[in-house]
Length: 334
Image 1 (cartoon, rainbow, N blue to C red):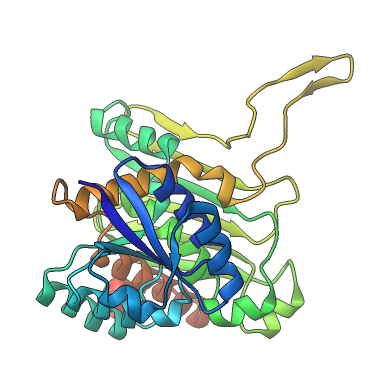
Image 2: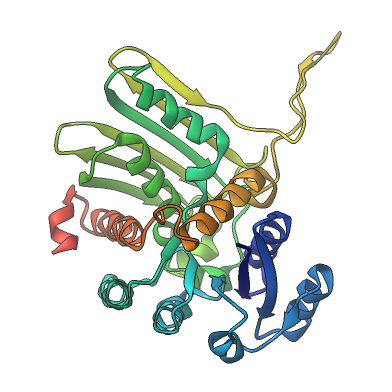
């Protein structure tokens, strides 16, 4: 069965998903919708699909599933509408910036028995997935400590900061999900520090650009997340897991993995410049996983509940920064 897709949103991440859908033999991109007509037309021209309104895609009988890449404040409403329409749903994170709104949305998903998958693409990265595989095989014994480094090459526009929900909900949320993925246990305590070291305008917008978060599970396992909106050397994406019998790590990836030796010393090519190229394989595997779930051949994962927990961890981090203390997850999940 070929899954017929509607794409909602033709921006940067919409282009990434359009490419992944078009490259999958089990999928076809039928229609794209975007408030910016030129953006929608560009994708339609590239992949041979139609430009339609969201309302037309909602009512369409020739579309089985949708990929939601619209602004965050539209996600929950769209998930509910397409769940009621009986279509499978893939939605970029977060579902909403409000925990209460996410809970209400997931109630509709459960009632309609809709297939919903949330876009935490890093679980599908072959390097990070290989780390998880070594954990599952018992190679490093019991997981004790996780270290996640995630630094962007540059900060987004301040106008984006204001609508994104801030660094914890927009950027660190990926790392919260990865921490859960690697720890294998739910997080019980959160302690965070945050500063404005990159751009004063980000601070004036009420956000931070440099943060560190310590997570702890009930059994004592720990995870440390380091985020920065500035990495002059490229897109910095690394993880390390320390266990009772050893450790496993995934290092930074480069478009070309070579090393050159000369009289001047050893040099290697630069890192990927951002997520669109660094996570190309992850996005393709993510869409493939969603196709399996939408076709009834697998369970959707990450789930809406995964999205809820990652957002709750972001809320706990914000509370920790504001109040200067360790925050228990029971305080934000109640």
